[in-house]
Length: 273
Image (cartoon, rainbow, N blue to C red; front, side, top):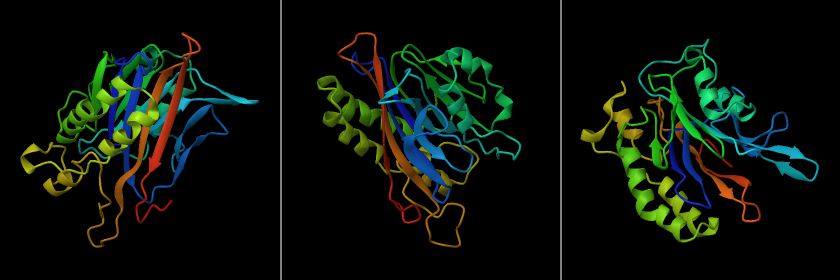
């Protein structure tokens, strides 16, 4: 996953609105959004490592599903440092939080940061959201507002994060304020997540990659590209999944929050539906 936008505690009925694009190699084996049979998790699944990039706690009971409001997302950190074979999967951070009972802050403080390749992790429940990474950003609660995070430091202003932030403020957040019903604003949200505008060369971040690659990765939505395979035109990398996660206040109960996670799978040539 390469970009996440979080509207946290901006709307009474929707205390969380999270939008994300997962960018990944197209051949990496992945299961679509589903209820896991072996863990109380509702998420897509990385079949290679067994974890996930975005999910909610949800447990199947007889005749219904039970939730506790826990949610989590992880992004890789792009700084030119290659992951080593002895590092744990970053997706395990998501699954361990979703299936645990530590508060978001306590969980973030308990992570052995050196066990993983570079990551940005955002975890939360109905009361608190926390961001942490293993590149010098200590566990920090999210303040009420709009947060857009990609593969650098949470406070970095990359072209793609600022473009997504601007379009959300102009095109999506006003719709939610007007009417929080999913059908009223989610089409606009997916449209914004599909923005493939690339950054001008003078607005590219410096993450140790070539200018050509930086520009390829600079849009909110990454079109399929022969990334890491310059000798062929066959696409190997791009945005694979677009997701919206919300926590919604249950109108029938002031104390109950309902989580909803939906995804669109991008139909790339190397990643057919």
